[in-house]
Image (cartoon, rainbow, N blue to C red):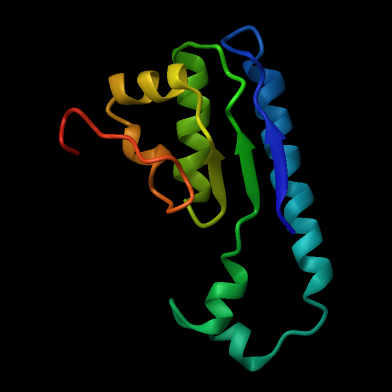
Length: 130
């Protein structure tokens, strides 16, 4: 089950605690939904190797972050979103259609690769070649 979370128009320090709680809640809801669908553990899923069918079942996308409506972002917003992306990984969290200001902020911080680390994310060029 993939949950979705829409970022606010103003992703700044004033709302960062609420956004953090919302992102964690959406991830938790998705995890509960995935556990509910996997009623029985099989030997394949217990000992699955990376790239195997069991591994792929566990690494389904958990959260899609809708970032199209972001009009303003500050460093706190970049830090929170980067932390979620780094902690969960691209197999678990995807930023859908990042707004231009978000792309620019991630590029300025040298973190553009986090927004395009998954095929479904918008591909942006990293000006620093990273």
